[in-house]
Length: 457
Image (cartoon, rainbow, N blue to C red; front, side, top):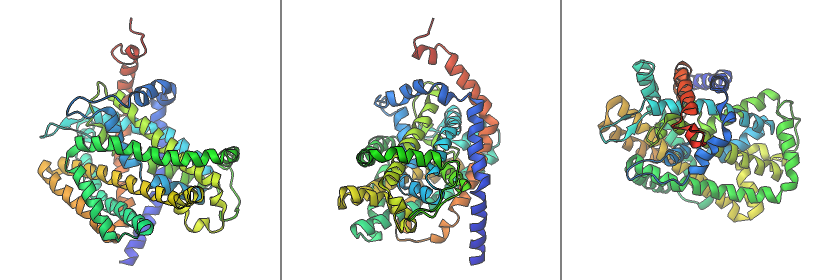
């Protein structure tokens, strides 16, 4: 058995190396190129359509574009924003942050395309809710139902160990910070998450609309105060990020040194993990939104990447680099603890508590949304009734994961994730022409872009 698990580890390491980085990195670049780098060309307009309309209220029973975006953000803004970034710095050097930013800009192409396709090919279920995602555009757009079934089946399975890992990180944090036993944490998490997901997408949207901005803002403001206090370090920090993106960095203090390949690999991987561009999960939340055009909903995918990667991940990076803790002896022993250490150094004991509570909120919000994603896979494959059964399977996984159960399943997490990314990126390549046509229609029509900027004749 151990030999088999070692083989899985080797295969996973290879797949998540060059093949995955090329698929997602160059894939996002190709799609951005084919769309004329619209994310740069129309950047001010897109910001007005997203950040400028965050507080527009939806009609009764509807999901607003912002609510759909915060639901998708709830799944991407997670523990990785706090603990993943310092790991990238320690293993890839400060230059990894530059490559994370590059990946964010390129990933905008992939995320935009998948959201537009999800919105275009969505349909209504038996409860009158809009449902969509890669399985629908694979079936109706590509006429490849088998590929949609393949994607949906492996995502439905992948979410079980994913939920367990998230629940385990919650229980581990609570045990360390508050000496709370894992089973107690598991039960509390189960109740909190269960109360939300049983209410369906409209309740999920209402909760995430309030929870995500609150938790992101609380962590962000706490971090910004530290950055302002260390503002004199910022020129050096930016010099480290840009300077070591293209050259190796020697070992200093607790940092073991890095090569250019490691900077690129860790930076690109961080970008991919944090914003989920190309994974096919975001369209499932966005397909439930009320909007007048698929392209307008697609803009909210860019909003997500800016909030998740450009703002939150960068904030964590600036805190870690400006505090100097990444160079301290022993920093390599526990990279994920660096943000909590930086907050504790600045705010005292309350600082570490703030980071721990942020982690708990981030993970709970992630669990709420990925259980919804899992239900949508079950609904697509086996119908609405079976999706309700899977809801309780996922909720039970919270308890199992919290107490550290089924750790054997965790070995297969990344390999199953790869099994959904490759078919989704294939679908984006094959269908991106439709998105290009829809984008051209949007920006040349007097009903949409021209009307918005006041150029209707």
